[in-house]
Length: 229
Image (cartoon, rainbow, N blue to C red; front, side):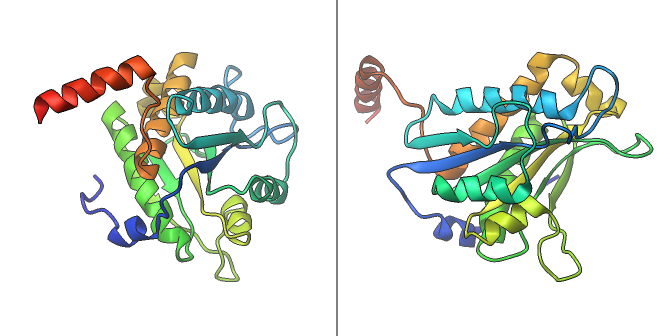
């Protein structure tokens, strides 16, 4: 279980903006297939369903400008994904993935974050919120993780390339699709879409944005609020 203690430093580092630019990165693509758990699952394809569901859910919130690093089955280098995010002036990059293990025995959900400040604190705060969403579904949390390379830099390319361009980034490994305890949560295509929607909820909470209500809904909300006061 995750600690209930939030990172106060991360809260102070999160700059308040009129609009946040978010880049969603569906991993792999083209000849980079990603995880292949069985003939019915190919990570590069399934990720697009999760990513599209995430983006559609984020459209319900105000103050967000959202981009995808890829919308089709194409090869994109990790560097080019980070360059794309920089061109869009991204405030954060969320890289989506699914997991598998060699012996098909590992299970659970995890988020990889940067070693470097301030990206570590920002990544930790988002990851905490995202893991709560996954735990709420019943997935086991493997935690919030970092990994360094031989140069004491971030091991994972998307995190390293984004940090080099002053952009915080995280890798979301939703679950191990090849293990029966996790397979229960991704039995149908709609399950992969639900994971994307839950990512969106975590992103919205992390950024402090709210659903974009219609004028009528806003009026009703103000009435209810005044009644409570």
